[in-house]
Length: 432
Image 1 (tube, helix red, strand yellow):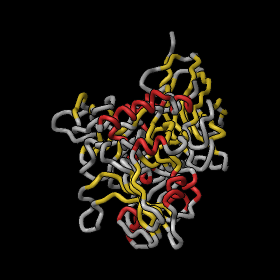
Image 2 (tube, helix red, strand yellow):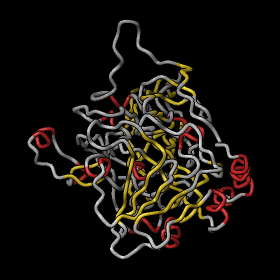
Image 3 (cartoon, one colour):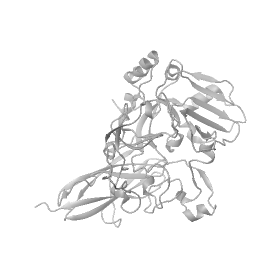
């Protein structure tokens, strides 16, 4: 049985139906429970992992915590909750639900959802307002499945210099899943979008004080009704064939393939058609990048007020070496298999290359199964270090639109769009 068939399996649907009939949510979020701390020695500050040497830390350096429905993940903050996925969970194309990273924006996130009363409401400038229960979403519409990477806009923010505010993510604020649900376009067509409409706005169940005085106590995102990505969007109720974890947006979340996770509204409950520009904080002020190549600028240009910004949208092409991870020495002469993942928000990854000599020479890696244009693509390459020493392995990806990872850093005040070629130091020792 392939991944799509599993996602449409009777078992996965029945799990949700059973939950619906009981009126209880799949799980509750009760707050972090620290299980293994990576604290500095007494009297010393937390180790810095930005700037020179940052790539020695693939992940951030926070403590591990346990949450309902989750394996131990790396804690960045608990209000709002931000949890990073450890490196070893990226050895496969699909990230386990229990290891999927978590990112909320406001303090008051839902601990439970009562499916006896919960409805997905479609309102605003429509011919017919709708209020659909979870069983209605599952039974009235043909389910569709789509593999897509969900990546936080600030993934790898810790790499930027000078340092910028925000969660100091390593590389683990991302995950790939097979999402199953209802096409957004079908819901909009059922409601009937009226003439003169310009935007579709999305709102979930998180609330709480955002940046003071900016009307940011609700997390609202919107997309232009003329944006072709709306035809690919899915309102998902299954994640890798299972109900969504509470911390990842149960009962449904919006999937915007190829776009950063800021648009992937969790616990999606309201869809509004607007006939005016969306002036809320999260569109007008937050999640914007310089309107420059790669979103690159300088602190001086920002301070001088010279930077025009646009909303952040698609994921740049990226790739990672997952194993070996540099934690152990490799005997000289031993042949090892390098393994990793690659992805792009602009289309399929069709080439991954590896270098062990500082980017002078590149060898082409073997690509894994193609799960779709917006999915992780696994890759592997055979490599032998012929003599002892320290090797810096670099990996770069190219997508079907011919976007290739650059080897230059990027800087902007939001800490977004980092996709510089990643490197991993490997120590090779004498096997005698």
